[in-house]
Amino acid sequence: MENEILITYAKKAMGNAYAPYSRFSVGAALLTREGEVFTGCNVENASFGAAICAERCAVLKAVSEGYTSFEKIAVVSDSGEYTFPCGICRQFLSEFMKDGSVVLEDKDGGIREYPLAELLPHTFVLLKD
Ligand code: THU
Image 1 (cartoon, rainbow, N blue to C red):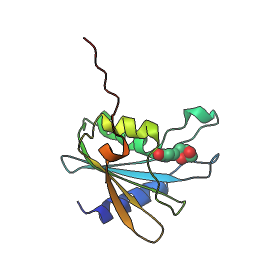
Image 2: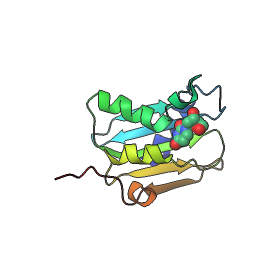
Image 3: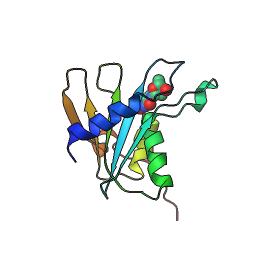
Image 4: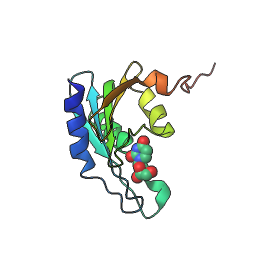
């Protein structure tokens, strides 16, 4: 799927952001290896720490529907700037998107794509003997 189309899905999802506290709306669109798209938005809460980022919202929707391998995720916000996934979301994505990429767009329509491995080198892995 074209990055432009995935961005369009992310922008639509951003319209559902529930962000009365930060007033920072984020939308995400996750493309699975099977070609399905799952979208997400940030969902905040009066108990601030309970907020869920748009990226993890999309991942939870996909995994709960049985999709666990992702090709890319598009992320947009209403800031007009490139909006990089936060550290928690990078780690969360890395579980299901080993060779995947993150697609971003700014207010001028400039699209950039980054390998997730570049945004999160040395991902935490749970190793024990
Ligand atoms: N947020 C996301 O949705 N994704 C990120 O990667 C970073 C931050 C949301 C969380 C919160 O609702 C708002 O942006 C401000 O931090």
